[in-house]
Length: 203
Image (cartoon, rainbow, N blue to C red):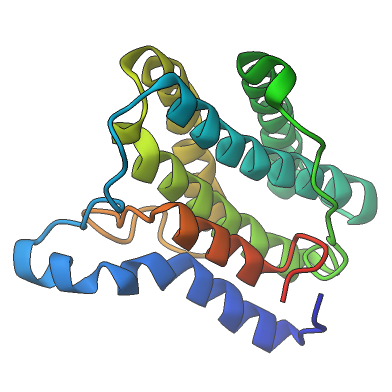
């Protein structure tokens, strides 16, 4: 992963957190609402598995990120409480999605968390950007899921939205800066995850 100064990394993370908003800017300007994620085939069991694979990737990244922060950083007070609580939630989410995928879960990704957990400021900024990304990913895929899977995924997504608000508050950002959120498609989610530099081999 590329080496980023604190200022440069902060700029990048802010860009990731708002990247999907820029992509949906025309729809927001014209309609006052975010554009939907790119159209997908009608919901099916196969499509559910593909979306759950994406969700599992994100949840595994989150779980690894918070585990690394708890082990490496001198977290205190609310910051430590946040990391511990959210780490526990992410572990539970990983277990639930792995169970839903059964034998199709696949191996965990190789992570590169050195820069994201280099100091407290990097941790705060990364947590806010990552949680925003995950909420967008769940919302963007919601209408592509079958009703049964959506009912289960919604229970995770609602908790992730609370994580995002908490992370933003800890980072000194408005918990809910906009009236409506953009809905990134799968490729946009993967591009933004790559931009965060948390996966080994990210550009």
